[in-house]
Amino acid sequence: MVDAVDFWDARAESYSKSSVGNEEAYNEKLRTTQKYFDKESLVFEFGCGTGTTAIHHAPFVQRIVATDISSNMIEIAKNKALAENITNIEFQRSTLEDFEATDASFNVVMAHNILHLLEDPEQAIKIAYRLLKPGGVFVTSTVCLGDSFSHWRVLLIIGKLFRKVPYVNVLKRETLNRYLSDAGFAVDLEWNRKKQTPFIILKKPAAR
Image 1 (tube, helix red, strand yellow):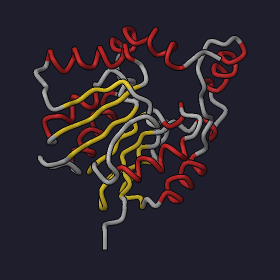
Image 2 (cartoon, helix red, strand yellow; image 1 turned 135 degrees about the vertical axis):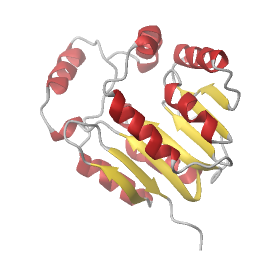
Image 3 (cartoon, helix red, strand yellow; image 1 turned 60 degrees about the vertical axis):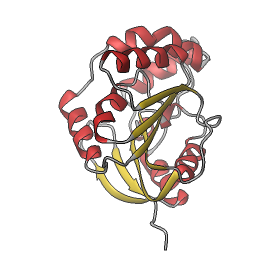
Image 4 (tube, rainbow, N blue to C red; image 1 turned 120 degrees about the vertical axis):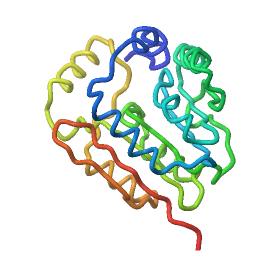
């Protein structure tokens, strides 16, 4: 199996030039997420890629910390933010496990198209919960390959056989929902749209 860091470092440049698969849906997700922001919001995104989503959200919040395991992705993200004169994003090369932050320090945590690439998505969700302030929001789009035998699963199997792809977790939506619930989250909004990646916004209970 290909090392994930090597895989994404090698593809960072082409990834940065690729278009969004469903631009209308992507823009709607941005607008929906921004309803949960205010000018004092502190946001953390893990698996930020080349920073596109963080850059879109930057004008609506106080500060964003965005991480990725690929140093090449992070370098591209920094250059994109610089080109757009965005100064309130801190891009870091880090795994989620190595990311250093005080518990309950963020109003929003985002994980877009990343949980299915992790060997332990349940632990990642628990970390997201821990990093959120009471009443904070977790925003995630998560590919659930385990719910259908799609052409992507066929390609994934072939890729693994020939060691061309990194680890991919064939998640089921039922399993994802259990991980989220067990962590303590309550669903605030979710899309169940045909042929679209599940998009869920969850809340950590407010302090009593």
